[in-house]
Image (cartoon, rainbow, N blue to C red; front, side, top):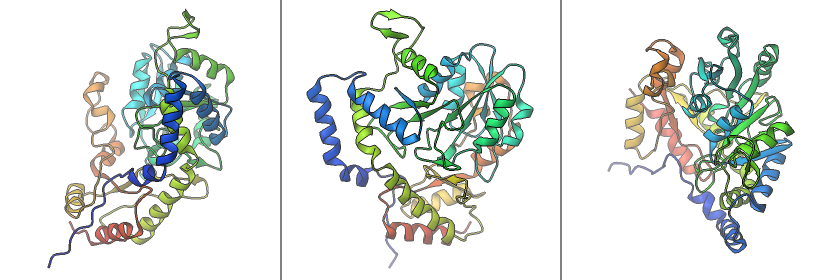
Length: 372
């Protein structure tokens, strides 16, 4: 008799949300009863709590992770004719934020073992038009931020972290915004700390920058109907702030479980066809938002896992320089070979709070049994 496949979705938020049902319901009722839904106490409370969690002075809520980066660049004065260095291997939102302020994204390759931007390649990409570096803390692992900060300081550049996938991650004992001028977060529902809709935040230790960000997110206004900047409408709403505040207390617990699962996978999967991600070292606390493996036979591995009830994803199947959105930059296949290799070989497998030990056992067994 054929063994029945165990079902492991790529991501399942139900365990997390079921545990928090009373807390989330209370948050909903509190906002509903207050009848105040925009920029009030819930946003203020969550901003204060999230800044404290990151070890930073200020946090400014906004509509989503893309806006967090866009507003930060705008507040820093990055504009038309400027260049901003971004990794060649990341989600397109990082580059779009640069485009939204009229600047040009300049792609720099990652290291193949960390997937993050390679500090050794940054200086050669700097020109007299470069105004900032966006270091993406991809898949939950922080970039080598001390090295990148040294380069930014050498050339008087702004350093921004895209921490959309790095809630709670640390580099040398510090969370986002310690090394950088600001860090932008997404609270898309599938993130380690996710809203029940879209939401984002910027964390910084710069009081002047924080004040400008509060103005820009709210139509360029500090006082109603007085607009001192050409701002936009990107406000974290009260309901999402309340949900996020209800969840924040459990973030470290969820990240700890992700680390338990990731450690088992790294230590117990010994299939030569599958390259496992680099384990945590003493400098990095990885929160494993995405557990990315590399496999030259990715299509076969994906089909095999899916047939055995295991959900997968690909981050990201087409690199930014080959996307139609950036064809105006004139890049062709082969221009960024490391990003292209990752896009062709990367497969994301389930690692999340709520997975049982039995599911982890099954996942390890199937990965070890894969044959091309």
